[in-house]
Image (tube, rainbow, N blue to C red):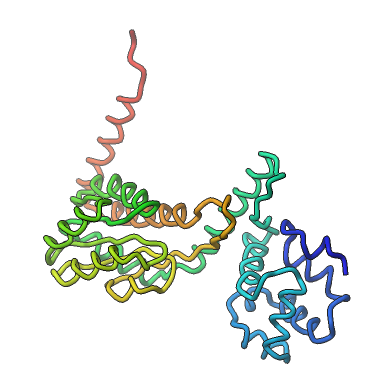
Length: 292
């Protein structure tokens, strides 16, 4: 079996399966055929479901994923999702020490676009609508986050005041506790944590909710944080543990903040929108070079 085919992390996984099919074991070929017939169905299937579709055992499915060069079923599904993004092959994101800058640029662009497309397909539209309803009628909004999530919180805090909604962004743990403790009915606590396991953020969500605030969370998956929130926006991305790979979760979260803020803006009264237009004009004038 051609080792270069399996080990090439830049190869489209569907292309690899097609190339290797004839060399696979008979039972592994059954899995290959199911994948090639309907890859999108397999992308959302479990190991057991895939085994049932192929008429093989679950260990056979896992053996197949290893045979085509993946570290396991989850890695196989990520590679499959990347291959299906935009209906065109997507370059696998693993960066090598030997990569030239133009190769790094291509891989990061491909990885980012693939992951954003994946996040879009997984976003719960009903939860999105509910979050927009809540934010549109909020008396005030406070965004909470640490690290990369704190950057997202700051971005949100910059956008929402433009639409007539008083808001803040708290990144310091002590200040977060103080602000959450003072929240009440009509306020919205918007907590941001990709892992959803940061203890202090979970505690902030609990305190704000106990005080009557509505809690919205932006997170990467079902997690302990979601149990303390009224609305959960899961932004699932194709995170890669390679130490060089950029944190796509932050980029995806920023996109969702843009979706929320734009949707809230479009619900504002005509008079409010006129003020925004005027503000934009003033900003444009300020950026123009003044004659000497």
